[in-house]
Image 1: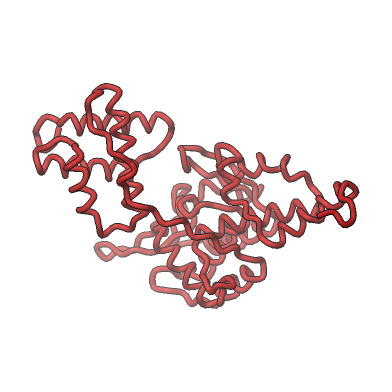
Image 2: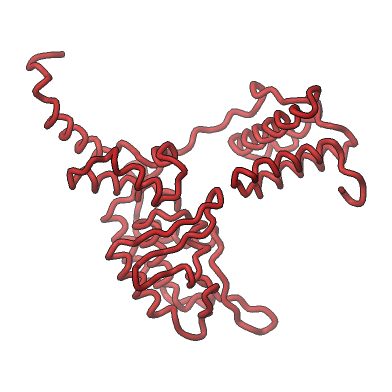
Length: 329
């Protein structure tokens, strides 16, 4: 019901579509919010979704970026296609009239030397009113993002009970598509994690298994409490460190937080080439480690940077150079 009234056919279709998508393990929280806003837009005009109303709704969101607007329009179309299964005559938007999304910006691949500079910058951070462990917290955040390829949300949701410090492993609970996984850490990352826990596991910080691994202080009614970092807050801190360490690519672009995940995947690829490993055999392992359903998703993070190209060219030459005739064009 909407405000005590019976749900409209559009509201019912939205609820059915969201429930259907969640059967596949998708959270669909943002999608549900966007679709319910569309339903409210139609309810305010006492109308069902039509070509005219869809155009009005699209124009009302002109402040959004073209990419975001395109995503919402595409979401509405998917909902309408789902609705058409039970209502053959319902309106379905024509994608040719949608906003034109901007291409995704290429990631900035962060090198080992740049990460070392960022870690040095993190070590210089002074304690803050909200985080006495500011330097240690930002340092372990960088280490886990770069060496374990965690998503930002996975990192901020980590709890003390998710950490197996003895074996050097992290339990990533119900991440994307509600998938959980255990991931082993490298020897260097294990050492960094144990050093961080040595500082973290003491009062006044929260020590319960459900307490966040990365925590900030909050004050309510005169009492100090400890809560997890919010994603944007952590991102802002990391971006400030990138600036402070002068980390950017040849075009002057600063890395985004998600670029650390891209960098992790590319570094894994380079490492396999250096060791002479079978890259194709290792890709399913990388997909499993990163929490992907298949290597198709993992391929999005594998970029043909010059170092990878050089390794691939050398390997090709070793195996097939005898097939190339001198002077052949």
